[in-house]
Image (cartoon, rainbow, N blue to C red; front, side):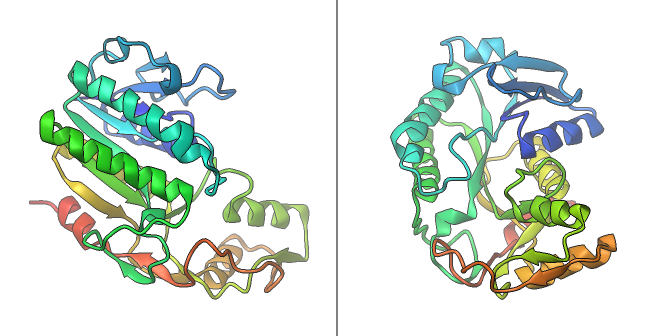
Length: 280
């Protein structure tokens, strides 16, 4: 099987390529020519392609892959920017539609837990999406567009709603890199929120493994949460990282307010994911 990966030089994409190499799967890494970093050496081929200016023969240039793992999305981490539905959404749909029209049969797309909006508690795939920021809205709108497209041009789609991730290569403004940098500087305290919010975190390596498994399954899965299924407070998460790494730094709780674009307590229900990953 041949699998192409968009956003291959990004945080998740680099780990997906490494996982494909680990499983001896032929891969095609798709990156924008403007990116400063090239993918790790795990891609069998590297194609420079900007989905906002994709050529009409993009599917042929990619080598007609069996599956596309679609991770590319610009404008992050500004979740509230109108860019997500004014520019990104139409460009994303036109790019994916072009590939499907050209013969792409199977698609795994990275969605987001923000599609659930301000709903609290355990979130499962049967719940109606209620996005409350432009990023979540645009992602869910793209999913709807692709579902409508399937009704007239059938293809297999897995929409993987990702929750919170951490790991090597993450953006410096994220929680894990900020904590690590503060500890390595020798800071006595780490400024953070009150830390009582409950979230769902997975290492990026595990997320990459799940995405590759879903791609190799080559099924029309529809929605699936990619998550731990285990709520953890941000305070406990930070304290755990400090203990695991032997850092001498203490959380400075309550320094920042809680974000107003997400509920205080939510996590994913991973029953469907476990069913898909369990050996038959």
